[in-house]
Length: 359
Ligand code: SF4
Image 1 (cartoon, rainbow, N blue to C red):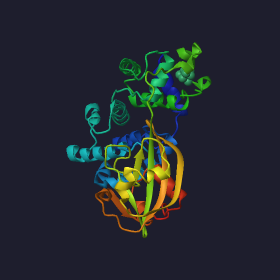
Image 2: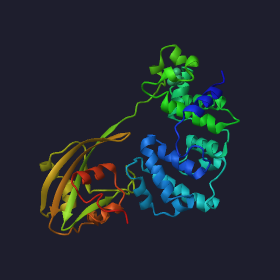
Image 3: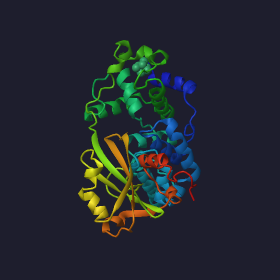
Image 4: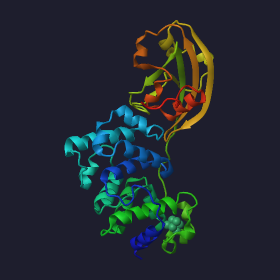
């Protein structure tokens, strides 16, 4: 069976009309690929449209201030993608005179671009014969050939990459790659694949053995860490404070609220006696007006348990701890990129966020 031929016939008839299909602008293809990593198409599409509108070329993106790029990314998560995108745009301007590189190796040398993204850009934009292997492709191939090698093992990565490359239609790698990914996205889905309408059904080993749900096989389960964030919405006169996250942790370069992280959930009466509280407030009187806990916020490797303390202080803080905080008011917060969890809190508390348009 010529799998590629079957896939392509199916694809021509059934693919979703998405704006990054049928174009060969490597910049826009790159944007779409980075936005769609770990992100559903429906969620990523408005972000793609906004990025293309605000930064129509790689030069526009390279010139933009990082805070503005992060702001546009707000809500998509995995913020290192936005930082890397911006940094790679600058490299393309500095090292390639603003022209997107056109070989697999040079594309892969850009920040944030791995095997998959390099193969996607090389094939979609330049029709170069590099097979893509993303989560969709792993799933389709694992089921189609009933492959027991775990997809997240070193041996598995090698085996699937070789197989994908072997199946690739070298005369039209762009369509072949799009087709196999699309099949994985809309037919051979992780749960409840639509085998009855799959063009590869007759040839699918997992389907024929009644073992579809057994594939793909994974070696490692992701270890999830629980973290406890006690956020402080500290009001002083008409202002409050944001914390610029510049350490090597989640949400790098975004802004959240001053926070005391504890090893487990902690009662308010114990938090006010903690070292973190004393570092922040010293001996000054702090009025706690409200305490609210939200249900755990789930990231890929971390579950964040958050409690928000709305407090007021009477004196302007002076200790060095406060140097990393930015004093804002409800009119200015719209300019700061913030994680979803903080946006959610501001919305719940009707704290100005969203009332003011980006300047
Ligand atoms: S028959 Fe089912 S399991 Fe096999 S490739 Fe098609 S959708 Fe996937």
